[in-house]
Every structure is written in C-alpha cells, then in structure tokens.
Length: 219
Image 1: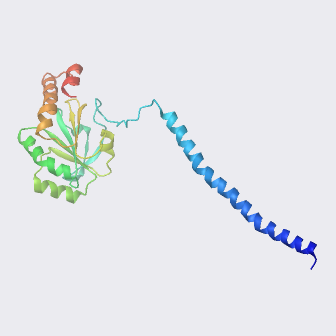
Image 2: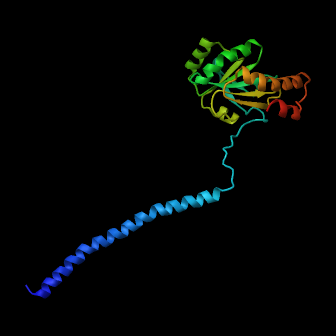
Image 3: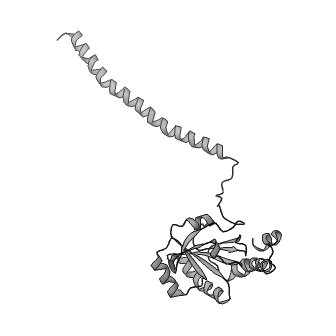
C-alpha cells in the first residue's frame, strides 16, 4: 500500500471520528444555554413585579347582601331554601362540616350561643348528608336551620377561605362582619357582640345601621 493511500485512509478516519465530536460540542453549548435563558426570563418577570402588591385579595361578600341561593334544607332535602327564608333580624351565618376538626371544637360554644338566644343559620359545606345529620344528632343542633351546600358554590360566593367561618348579617340581609376560624368566647365578646348590638339597635328602630357605627363595631 502506497503512502498516499495510507494518508488518505487516515484522513478519512479522522474526519469520521471528528464529525460526531463536533456535533456533541454544539449540543452541549445548546444545553448550557437553556438554564441561562430560563434564568434571564425569571429575572425579567421579577423586575416586572417590582413595586406591585403581592398580597392575595379574597373576594368576600362583606357589606353586600347575602348572595342569592336555592339550596336544600339539610333536615329535609325535599324543601328548597332561598334568601326569603333567612331571618329578618340580625343573625350569624355559620359555615360548617362534619369533616372539619375546628368545627368540632367550635360546636359546643355554638350550642351555648343557641341557649343564649342567638339566632344561627348553618351552611353545611361539602358534606355527606348522613355524616352531617349524625354530627348534629351527637353534638346537638344549634341552628334555626341548616342549608346543604354540597357543591360549595354558595360558600365561595360568601368569600369562604376555609371552614369554619361565620358571617354576621343584619336585619336587611347585608353581611356586616366576617369571622375567619372558630367562634369562641374571646371573639364573641371582643368582636361579634359589639357588632350585633349596633345591628340589633338599628333593627329594633327599623332603620339602616349607621355606617360609621358599623365600621367601628363590626371591624
């Protein structure tokens, strides 16, 4: 074999070996660029968010009428309740569920409120009807009525963030206070009672409650 042929073969072999190496280097460069591009994109997004509020705003029905509903009565699901069935005097609208641990903790105090003559309307939230009725049979029923919100849409319309939650409603059906978490003796005395006093006084006089008094008492 001549030296020229041998040289030609070596050249061919080098080309065949070097070709894939060149492709791999190009692919590696692309892979190195991807994280850099993602990082730059994140920096751009963060820069665009500078100076803008980051708090999550919950859409509640505060200072608005109780949202319209047509829901079955928990104790008799053949009966459909609407806003017309709500009390015409200030009351508490309590969202609860038998599956909710904090509701179980709250329940004995709700029974005390019922004994004190407080009008409570229950919203049974995303619950099995058998479990809900057993829950009330075991612990007592503090509610003048409970409506079954199986889909949870009504509670969402109220602005629920998680059960239990309680809404203080005036005699005209307007929500004046939103209590997140359990109702207990502490927030009953410090928050709910002052609000109910203002609402009951206006209801007794058959007038709309004074906005300034509501803002102060129902905060």
